Image (cartoon, rainbow, N blue to C red; front, side):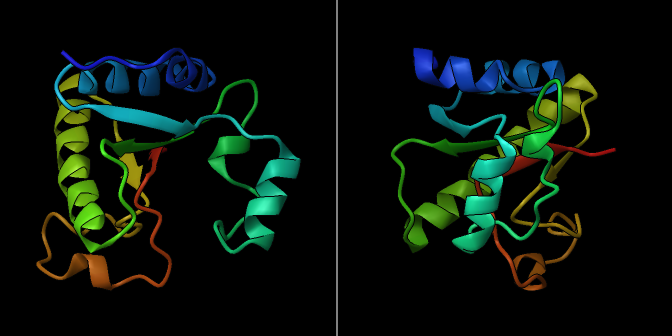
Length: 136
């Protein structure tokens, strides 16, 4: 059974308890790693400068705990095949979250229509496939 490394646990534990619960269940079935949990405002500003984020008001910067986590399946691949795996992973994450009563938003589908629209992943200009946040 897969499990998180200590580094992934530390990153996940900087997040809201609902995100912790969801991803602790996900990792039991789907090998994955937590890339980021809570971020400092300085780190967020750097990611915006690099074009890897679009806002300084990210849910990663929330206090006292992050309302977002960046999580990807193993093996980590950023190519087309990896993107397909991240989409599959997102479906699994949404299934687990739904069973737990946790509402999520995913960076691969900001408008939340991918599950009902065949080409839903093409209707946005900024893809952030590792990003999951609590929907409020």
